[in-house]
Length: 161
Image (tube, rainbow, N blue to C red; front, side, top):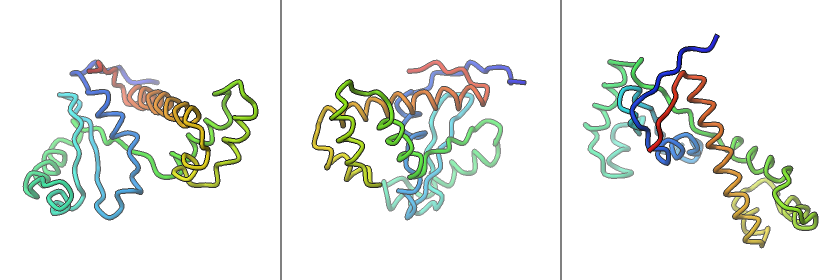
């Protein structure tokens, strides 16, 4: 049974999508966690190691520590935003390549053949700006859909900013 939806304060859509679609594997040297404040709609970014907050972006370690403390004190208030691993990003590209993003069969085949397991290399090797733009649009749409599903699963009906 699905839980009752909570209509909450306005959420910054771009901030939430950025947090949700972030590559958690990329930040392995200074891991971050992200949370949605269910009361205010704020997206909260915290470094796992307080000193990394200052090292990476100049946020005082004490400020990062206080963020962790707030979440520890009121865990029901904060929803952890999971982020993606490398495999999730590759799955989106593979799904794109299997989709009918273009009517040009030759371009679709060329784009599929250019993928060798590295997204950055694919973007470079596909050598078609339209294909890369179509992928970015597909990726944005896919992540937005996944965001909506994630929030619904957690009983949240957002009002987007």
